[in-house]
Length: 586
Image (cartoon, rainbow, N blue to C red; front, side):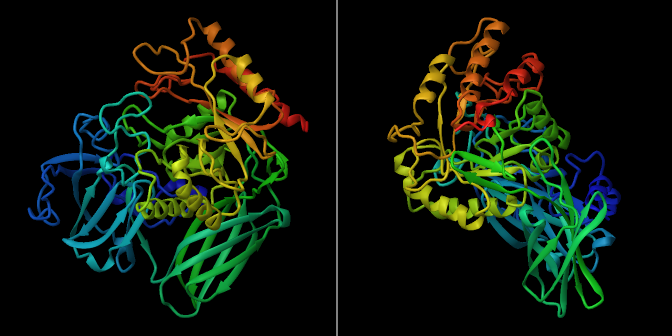
């Protein structure tokens, strides 16, 4: 079955076993999809462990917790059914639920997946510890086959989230009350939880590197298992038709090269996605089948330009922080993820900085489908950027790169935001890790403020100047790279990656510069700001702050509830007009 059909149908196990309605019932990983899975989203038991003595009280097994919560929503959110907001500083929390293993999973290896847990998660199944994961942003999984039993099974999750130590990143989560540009916190499980059945050997993860120049794609697959005579077959489909395949043999890791009979490029605004099917067999026995997809897309640098498939594409980016009024870091639905992209595109934008948050794979899937460019970022705020605490940062950023590197929509990486010179050591370390894991995209070591790489490949600055003429004049004269840096042009790709932030209905809130007194005044100022970017032939793009209001920050093009503030068509006409960069001027 092809990926598109599987995404529509879901799994028989899910339909048979999950209570309705189930929040976020769609498969969380369209890029790593098997048909034998079961969502564990929905009602769980929950308890705040103020004394941190849950283990001594026996909460790891068999004891009811004192409250209920709706997973995958955090206890601070309204959709969780608890709605604490920032009223309580949670540090230790516990989750518990029972599940019956579906018949379709009997006799298989079974894994439990967590899309994201903030911050340290310890998982127990039927009272036995099955694994611990540190980091708030990305999925992790544990095999639980040997811990399962007939009948009801219990899963318990203990979470430690101590954001006040400076030893973990927080992004825009407030350590106290919301204020300025920090907002309501997220604690614990904030992304879907699901079970997945696999064969005795299975494809654990994949790297997919498109090569449009040679009409092919390179696939590297890591294999988990010890079956003999393993064969891995990779097949690519275009509109349901087989257009290429390759086969490899052997254990542990296999590399395949799929030559494509039909060359269809993924391009911003005009995307094409191939379906990818991986089948692992031992002799004549099929052990595993994995569905994914890819886009035939290449990112290169040529002087000041960043090219997509050899063509300069001016990057009209919006700052997207991925907060929701009722779900906070968690979107209320899959449709909401898609809608945010469509809202941005309606205003003339072709991409986003995914700011101070690692967005879930379902968002990246929609970006891939809609032809929307994004820069992947890390929520470094709150982390003490000094040794010896580098390991947690580097480990989690590596996990992020490995999870997301196959998405064609991601056109660049940026692991830091607004750091000073003291962060130079860790910036350079993380930049080198980024290029080692993924050399196929540009990497900006930090957005704004202090750039510390001796030989950068892309540069930027932040500038919230509210006078459009001043903004235009400043950047036409020179491309200073920002705070603590020499005012010199290095001839590299450059963008002003935060501009605007113009407030509207901002009384009692926060925005940049004086609030316009009328819609006409807003349009005039917005146009002058955007024109200063579009008319500069040295910029490959810009990023406007921001897509939506968030709590007290009132500078979105949409209100926090996603209702438009302005005439969207008028914004589109201003934003989407041809840029000097696109005229191929020197």
